[in-house]
Amino acid sequence: MLDLKGRKALVMGVANESSIAWGIAQSLAEGGAELALSFLPDARGRSERRVRRLADTLGCGLCLPCDVREDGDIEALFEALGREWGGLDALVHSIAGARSEDLVGEFTGVSREGFALAHDISVYSLIAAAHGGRSLMQGSDGSIVTITYLGSQRAIPNYNVMGVAKAALESAVRYLAAELGPAGTRVNAVSPGPIETLSSSVIAGFSEILGATAERAPLRRNVTARQVGNAVAFLCSDLAAGITGQVLYVDGGYHITAGM
Ligand code: NAD
Ligand code: IMJ
Image 1 (cartoon, rainbow, N blue to C red):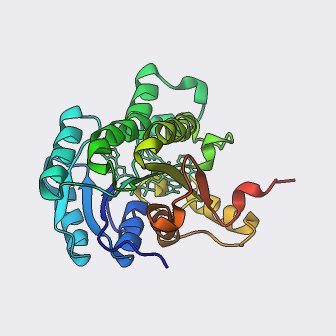
Image 2 (image 1 turned 90 degrees about the vertical axis):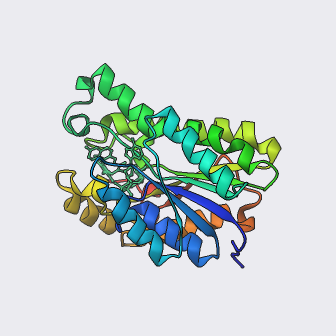
Image 3 (image 1 turned 120 degrees about the horizontal axis):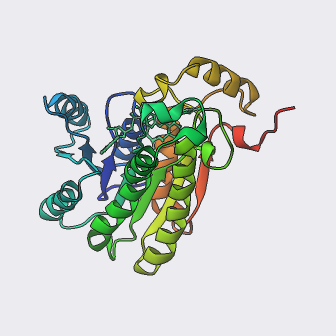
């Protein structure tokens, strides 16, 4: 039985109710975990109000701002968790970011700055969070989970610099798993198929991508954020005690197919 009672879990990356991170938070809460959410703050406090309203529905009192481009924000986040909880059992990273102009057209046109930004937000942030949470997770059979995409392995139209960043993210999962394993911390990634969220719905032709994916996937349907959340909850639980350094596809089997 999946049981996360008494486990303390941080979920990074809830922007709104369609965020994959929100599906993950719901699944972890259903498993009995106590939650903290971190969000990207904005000047007007709008995202904070939105995320707090969602957190309240799960009885989650800890909503903490964290812009992962800021070392000080990451330090402050884990300081606050140390103060409030004194330990951490699960850390979920569901964050990506690139310039919109780098997610369309020619990959060779990416700028040095655009490349660095995508890797800073989407890859370095996982390493920095693992570093920040490391001492809090020590001795608790901790679990770190990040969210990747098939564009790390295949040249998917327009995914471009994010594909390179996701390949680096999956490699970081393996290096983190190797380093943190001796302290009992497991590190894995979940790779969902396309889901309509803030980060995907702005992509040109996204509804066509959803349709084509559902048609070709062995399960003949798209996946939901809750299905991703359930896989993350599994990886955070003792049911996955033997799994680390892995990329688990939650994509209806799409990645095994070949188009002809
Ligand atoms: P989303 O927009 O809801 O989530 C992305 C999150 O990243 C947001 O909460 C955003 O605030 C956060 N973020 C961006 N820059 C940040 C910064 N500087 N500091 C802190 N947070 C920052 O979209 P989503 O689709 O739920 O994306 C979550 C993860 O899922 C991403 O890693 C994405 O690559 C991955 N993913 C998405 C899909 C999809 O089709 N939606 C498929 C596979 C993988
Ligand atoms: C993103 C771009 C191109 C093709 C894409 C995607 N496909 C899918 C996505 C096929 C599924 C969504 N995805 C997996 C992502 O990781 C998206 C990351 C992302 C999206 C945006 C959009 C708005 C913006 N910056 C972004 N940075 C990262 O300004």
